[in-house]
Amino acid sequence: MAVNKWVERFFGTPMPDAVVISSFLFPLIYLIAFLIIPVLVMLLTAFLYHGHISLFWFKSIFGSPYYFNPLHPEGSLVTTIQQGNQTVYYLSGWDFGVVINSILVSLTVMLLTTILGVTFAFVMARYDFPGKNIMRILLFVPLLVTPFVNVVVVKKMFLPNGLINWIFYQHLHLFPHPIWIDGLVGVIIAQSITYYPIVYLNAYASFINIDPSLEEQAENLGSRGFHLFRTVTFPLALPGIAAGATLVGIFSLEDLAAPIVFQGTAIAKKLMSFQIYSSFVSGFAIGNPQMAALSLIMLTIALIMFLTIRWYVGMKQYAMLSKGGRWKPRVAKPKGWQAAIIYLVVVPLLLITIFPQIGVVLLAFSRRWYGTWPEGFTLANMKALMTQPDIVRVIENSLIYSTVAIAIILLLSLTASYAAGRFKKAKLAPVLDSLATIPIAVPGIVIAMSYFFFFSTVPPFKGTILDPTNLLAFFPGAALILAYSIRRLPFAARSISAGIQQVHVSLEEAAVNLGAGRWKALTSILIPMILLNLLGGAMLSFVYCMSETSVGITLGSINSTWYPITAKMRELIMGAVGSASLAAALGVFLMLVQILAIVIANVITKQRYSFIGLT
Image (cartoon, rainbow, N blue to C red; front, side, top):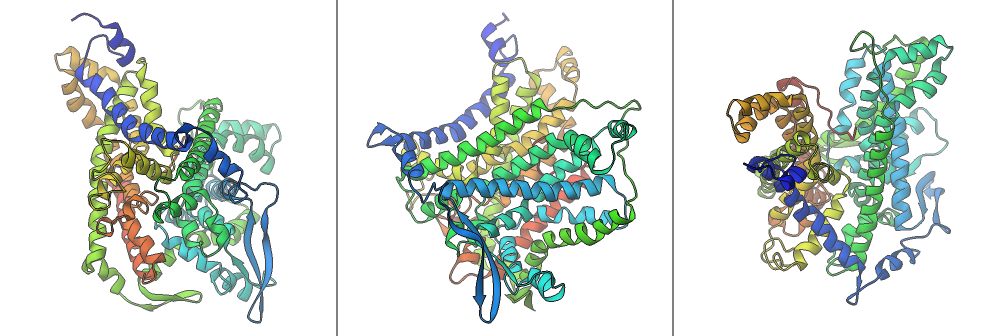
């Protein structure tokens, strides 16, 4: 068969090969069809005004003080209010307009999570102390996603009669008056407590991978203590830390749980994610190009953050070589004052950050939350998971949606990783690699809005089960499966790509030279050798599909018959006849699913699996 230069240029193989070409085209066509084109449709909607290309909708946003008010902010960070006979410090935050508020919240959450994550990571990576293994386990607790309910617990923690004031005001007398955290400050605190483990995981991996000889050389030259950390340790770990912090910033930007729970304060509603969500659920999004423009602004900010950190990490890779092969990380017994800081500051801080998950469990087994603690033990909420028809239905819905999405994700991840990893010289390889990675930077609410405009306006889909405006025929499950398969693709793709890189290409080449076809070499050599990576990626993606919030409470909430778990949790938390305890029971169910995934990934597959990361 003659060499085809076009095939070789685009697909990296000198002769047409159905397996290779399909491995490139399937993920490319899927991602273009259900990611790129929907975003472009939304882009066109945002730039159209009375049938002409215009910046009108963007001008309407940046010209409105409601959306953009950088020079004359309203409100205040802290005010003193009277609650009965008691003076209370009320923290809510300044209002700079929707766009600026969102950016400031995201940056503040990045800063706070970096401080928390780096502190915990440095203690765990550099010191050996009694209780360290327990602390290691507790640091994974905040990773257990319980949408909405954990934020409700955080909100109650910072009420005047909440846990924080019970500890620091009533017993330790560290505050002159009780504090009440609400509004944007509440959103920042809730997001920081939820997302700091992402930075912790990246920072910890960076610290233990630092060549100890570099720090030893600095010590020989007189560097000690904080100076050593500031000039050597932290700069070497900075790429990983910055990657984790940036991912947190993107998650903060798209988060809906915290703004929805804190929406009782008007300023908490003035975030881009909440504005898009509220317009969607109220029906205001139908044919509303201004919301398309706001979605594109959010997407642009997220992509700038993502691409900046990819460039920064690429520019800041440090080569670290050890004379004796793989090095042993520097671990020391803490000195007296260091041990005091660990046990009196770091450990109590950790316990505070895991209380939201503890509160979710307590609430699931209680009748209500009164004052500082839940009260009234009951098993009724947990029994409802198996006996209450509407609750059973949403669990079944989520399991079905997530399972189907995982099948698609695995096929996409395997083909994309195989094509981009094995045929790197192909012109399409870097394009495919970027397309498989970029969904991690696309906010879920942007996916929901782009699907809304795409499926309700493009002729092949308009009027079908994918059209959200066709209420009688619309099937949310189909849209959710597509959204899950796009949004959670990078997690599985990263795991599978790492596995393919560890299998030398000569093994497949040997099989081909012995007469096996490309398909035979793939299914009998490569796939069996990366089976654990496939399983790990599938479990990770499944966990995130089950707890997907943004798409679930927008597209997924249009028809209650087809609710996913997160849509039902939002209804139970915010509905007039809802039940926070029943929502907490669903949260416990999600926690159990995640714990099972962790156990399988770490025990059965015999590998440590980092749940979230960018490095």
